[in-house]
Length: 193
Image (cartoon, rainbow, N blue to C red):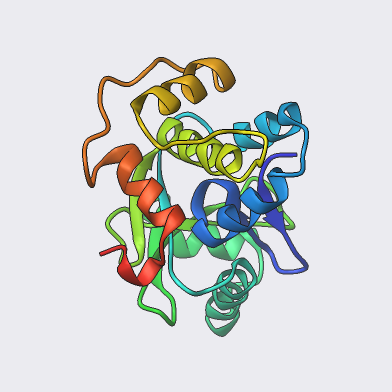
């Protein structure tokens, strides 16, 4: 399992790293999943900075719109995409909701279009992977009725050190990092900005 969403379209997309609504849904699934399985799936987020799309397009909509974009350009194989990408190794396209997406050459000839949200794209935020894993774990633990959960620095650090093997954080700055993502996962996207 590599996190890439593969469909009958030639597009790959890692929803674990880049799609808020997918992850929000997965937190409800993970509430009823053994923790070791959750940890294995959280590894699909990676360990670097990532751009997280929080717009209304579903994973399927994003993949379909990207496929349609390239179909309209008559880019139907990896060689044509490679030519289109020149002189760089990537380009950006805009989808129907005005979000920007980076297009790169995929590693698989059948799924030759690799996509992810562009840095500073509308409807995306840049987050640390460890912050994303922390908030997802907090969300999963908060919905477990056996846990007495209070969102505070102590709980955050118990999750980070005890469940994720991460170092503790010194503070929860209002509107930044963990607190910012916690707000997103517990509120409505419309009130996020």
